[in-house]
Image (cartoon, rainbow, N blue to C red; front, side):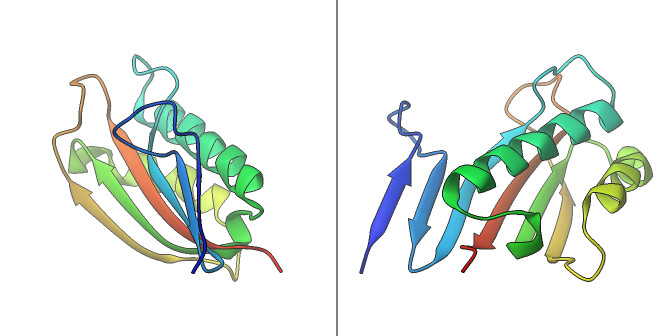
Length: 118
């Protein structure tokens, strides 16, 4: 059993954990928390792309995604960005729940599980 942890600068978490060809990303949020829901969603997904590349994967290999959204009134606007980002035919299992996030200005957060590209 092999476990690799990347991005362990913070004691409480790793940015990436790889176990048996499965990649787990810690929750990702927007770079600019003052932006609107669409901009926050896009920069959050850009971070997912970056981390997946670091781990040897990409968005075609995402198995599941859990999206936390501050206000379900933003659901349609978030989905507009998500739908443009997801590659047709490679949609992961997904759940989206309304939740309080770590900082009040954050509107959306995502946690991703993906397979390593082979």
